[in-house]
Image (cartoon, rainbow, N blue to C red; front, side):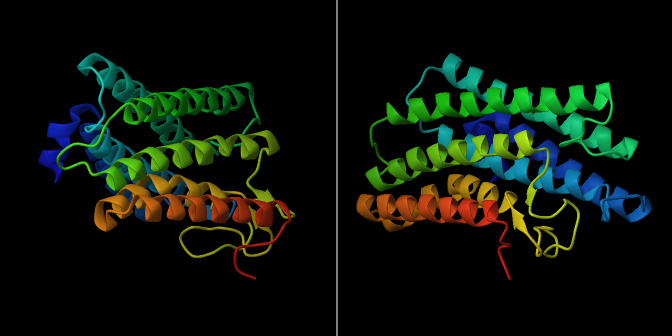
Length: 252
């Protein structure tokens, strides 16, 4: 699969492979570095973001191959996505090595710059993804790219971008928890709050439409079913967001 991904999009394929290695590195560091931040090992966040970036770049590189766009346009979109994510990774790993938070951290001028610049990079990243979505909307079904699969790609990218911009809500609040402080009791591994609302839940669910809807379209072959699933996915994301804003945890 890696060789096929590299054939489809070498830039995003190598970005995904590099972050898979970084995940292993962060996992190893978590076993030898016991420092914690808000009750969680400092290398957990780098691990989670490395996995997230693997899924994002591998999926986008795989499906963007089908887009009807020039080689130069595809390369530009791919390099912007890869470059901004690499910058994010440097910031997240660098701040973890310092033993401080990378997100919502404005304790010093340097920390504030890191957090603010990461926000700028994510906006640029989402705009590049929108450019990729536009290319996909200009694409017509072909052999191997059924109408349902194509609509799954289109709608998956759109919901992914909308959920990505929801991260701005967390940034404006300088925390992801609602009704409680960040870092309290949370679900295993994901650490979503079990005592109050958590804006990361809707963010997570919405962004993974990027994987779910193209897969659904590829498997089922029904445009109507893909549209219905997209509407349900969007509705669930909004419900989770409203629930979190009301201070209610996902479970409890």
